[in-house]
Image (tube, rainbow, N blue to C red):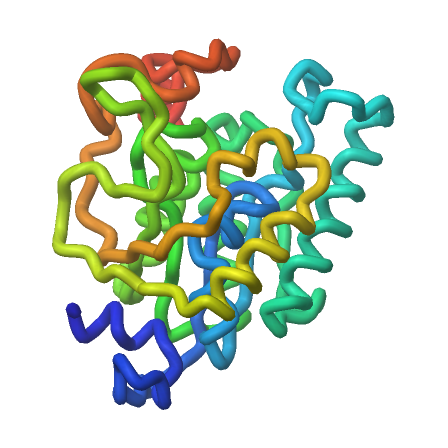
Length: 261
């Protein structure tokens, strides 16, 4: 288990026995619920976790909202915020540590300067010892934008990442919570109590019930040092997951936007 990754955990964790000089961790993700499915159990172990969301989780196109939701984009964003606060309360994280830049869902790559600036300002404000963010894996364009923006904003800060989902390059089936090839990873094996806690956290996101079903029952969590990605190239061969889903932005357009910002 790499020592730096172990430093994400509590100093008194039986598997760790490591006391980091600054235990504060900033978790930078794209949407309310990313932090839960990727690191819900870890969050409950961290002594001082703050979470920054790039987006408010609300798309402008109602086709991408939860089926059965009939309100406005603003109402959808407020619903997702309430769900987030409920889930994070279960992990012992209060609303004062839940920060958001309020970018629209699926728009993060087109707001990269704002995203990078927002991350940099948050780092300056809360002074974390480490960052936990999302892998560049082609699952969702906002996830990849966050991975890129953190790399631009957080030079010199120890940064780790977690996987959410990506299309298997061979079968195009969605792979959940497994990394694409890269650095050595650490597997956080959940206790029965942590699995129960994480399930309750995931189920707090009622608007995302259909999407988050892929993450139940809760899996063990995976983390690794964030590698030096080449964001001018696709994260893997074949179609990306969001291309398979027919999102308005495809990989080529994402990379064009990333290069031009």
